[in-house]
Amino acid sequence: MPKPITAYECIHGCGKFLKTYRIMERHEEACLCNLANRTCRTCLHDEKLTMGKFACGAGVEKGGEKIIRHCPQWTNTIAEE
Image (cartoon, rainbow, N blue to C red):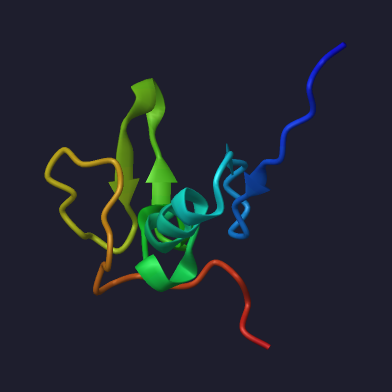
């Protein structure tokens, strides 16, 4: 019979599950889906091009990076109420 375990899911919706609460807390602080990190994944300007290339619609030079953190041109993809 399988042994049940407890797992924690990221509150930012990235789909990550971890076994310990403390490791999940650290993940959530750095999570690419955390709006506080202002990453490309949560930005209105993020564009995926062909062949796995990414671009920024706001003109930010990514310098070969797929994800930029704390971008000055970041715009929230979630409509503010």
